[in-house]
Length: 387
Image (cartoon, rainbow, N blue to C red; front, side, top):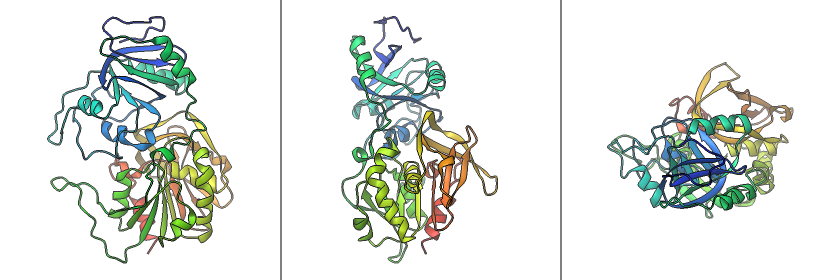
């Protein structure tokens, strides 16, 4: 339904997206009833909606899917990146389509309801996308009430009163609280996920969980590494007690500067050992801060599975998956660091490496396979550097 900023009620509407400035986008509710407040963003991927909803990096966010046909492959217990959905809800142009996949366990709208996540369909997602591109990602409330009754003034106040993602540390909220071992390999048709068959002397990677995706862990194992996962707040001494050959810094949500308060000192101590380090997404940003660079909030962020990223070493272009609202300012990199990748959309920094040791990171998600395997070399490079 088209938005009407002046309407306080809409005939037939059972869902609404309310922006902090009072703009309303009416639609039909799906999934769970209730309301949730967060940052409204958009994702341009044509598939992978279940992976998006369960990516811990989306904590605190409401996803507008620009692709109209959401739900066409249903939902299952395998295509998930975390223990539960972290996105607060999703906004869609068309009604959720019936599942058409042999792997589907249930319809997507039922999956949303089971996990307590709100959906609103029938919304002009193009209007939301244009607005975000022009004005930036707003604070918003997504709401669903089957009776169509909403206290709009209260929802506007809730959206306007939310602090926003800037300055917010969400890594602690989505991180695991214990140390654990991961040994699962990537999914294969007809086989599902199988344990990795690694020798006892395989390189050992400690992965710091700021909101880590399961697909990342699977790629590390597939590249030949034994993997132990530690909480975001793990100390340097706790990490070293595990006798790692390399350190991996994971993706995650929130403001990297806020997470860096406790993460950066640990990373700096690790860098002093000269042992290999690899970071993705939030891990990339934290490495940047640890070496003295600055991070800044982006106008609209990068979220989708069709982002071209250029390798500066040879000019090769990778098609990548991205999900980030902050970026490392390339102009603030120190003398012993250089840019390795840039976005061809806006020239923002998408990769860096240190020149005096094996420590590198990328902003995009090489495990997400949009290319589909354009960026897998990063995992192989890291693990081979541990031998």
